[in-house]
Image 1: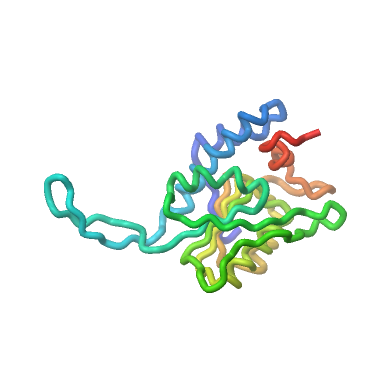
Image 2 (image 1 turned 180 degrees about the vertical axis):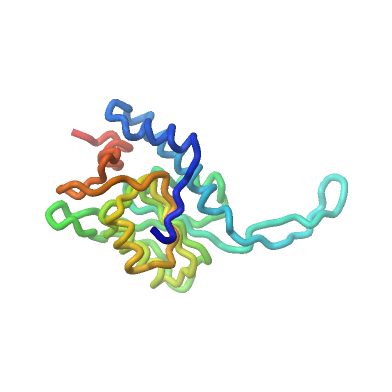
Length: 209
């Protein structure tokens, strides 16, 4: 599928196996999400533009490189929160802007309940964080919010994605790049990703019953 960049790395495969295991405890699951998110963030930022900055080392004057763009990290609440810290470790000067959405279990459609995108102050690049791209509804809504905000370069970071969600996203926004660790097989009748890893939010925050 176009504009889908899958992370091909042995560490990604290893961490995914930990996340998929039903016996992985919440504390390990949460830490593994962070490790895999950092790998994804490195993958997703490898082509960000640079500009030259003149600095002085302890020895000489030197033409160094720095990022030439501003970046916003945009987690979709609540599960996306678990991916913020490792991305901030790589981009400490980035803004963090939150979008709150949940899936209506009856309709499987996203319901927005919170948005913190300040008017008249958008960044050059927006990184949307959500561990799972299932139906695609929440991420499609987040992309729409960032477009209305004025962001020109929108990138989505998800640990796993279903083909159905990818198709929906790229029907609306074919220019958006999706960075994933795995494209899974399908959605089941309840709109959960198969083989998947269960409900990421519940497993991250230990709220499963």
